[in-house]
Amino acid sequence: MRVLGFMTGTSLDAVDMAVLETEGEAITAFGPAGERRLSEATRDLMLEATNQALAWPRGAPEPAIFAEAARAGAEEHFSAAREFLAANGLAWSDIDLIGMHGQTVLHERPRDGVVGRTIQLGDAALLARRTGVPVAHDFRGADVAAGGEGAPLAPIYHLARARASGLETPLAVLNIGGVANITFIARDGEIAAFDTGPGNGMIDLLVQARGAGRFDDQGRYASVGRVNEGVLAGLLGHPYFQAPPPKSLDRFDFSLEPLEACELEDAAATLVAFMAEAVRLGFEMLGEAPREIVVCGGGRHNPRIMQALAERLPAPVKAAEDHGWRGDAIEAEAFAYLAARCARGLPISFPKTTGVRWPMSGGVIVKP
Image 1 (cartoon, rainbow, N blue to C red):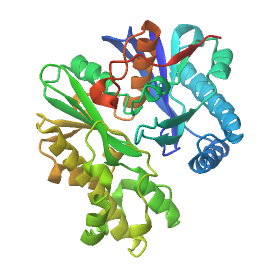
Image 2 (cartoon, helix red, strand yellow):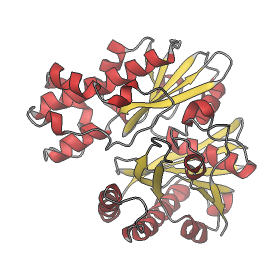
Image 3 (cartoon, rainbow, N blue to C red):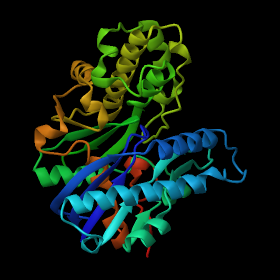
Image 4 (cartoon, helix red, strand yellow):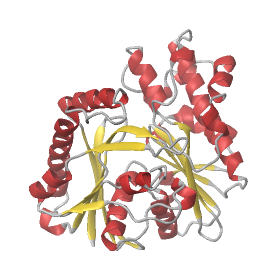
């Protein structure tokens, strides 16, 4: 089946889109991929929804802004995909299924026997009506309800993508989005995964808080800063790093407060070191080094991040493009793949990826 996958990351910069042909196991063809920047109005609405989500007490009514933001997100997806499909000679009738992740505004891992909470905003029913195509969504809900972390979900796709490329195992895929996460593929094809710590998210928040832009473009701040070793040690003292995997994070789980006394450049350099050292600690927890580490996500565009990873990690670090992967489209591809698995009732989360007790299918399909 031909599936269109969508992803909007916590950076709130764009709608990513990718088309795959797959039945949820092997990938038979890679269709086009692209992105369209989010409108300022939708971005602002999602930011306010995120702020309200962070202040939303358990058991209280859902903030009214969630429904408004979900509708705006669906319209944004529709407009982006309409242009994308037309530019690539495709119509909605050429698409069998859509996978929409939605915009994450809240992610809380389970703690002390209390199930987690995870909110991804996107009105799937509206998108199905607008496109005339069934939409798979809510990929994390069933896993979280069953006591799982609800993240990361891309590992089963990383396995399929590595097989499609004929890559040798053991292999690791490192995604650096707002949060960084590892997928480890063992020699026998078994997968393990977890969030290692912050990715770009804290750096983005730092730069935005200092009025210096939306992100550290090409690492220009971090590249001239000096790591504050005392602050770095304090950040690494967070109990998350002692917790065994699988485990997951929200990009707001770590505070920028320890960096307030640092100049912007030094703070950015310290956060790059924090991200890379957290990844290194993650590989230590795995207890086995991969042949190589394939890096995808926005972080691979930051030369300082790639340098820090190469200096610290136990295997050669390669950008996704080194293997012909579309590094900016991996997550959109992943949700196309997960949508196909949802349609067939195949598992998308596993004990060693989200901590759920048994392999679980997930996602809900809404028909037009």
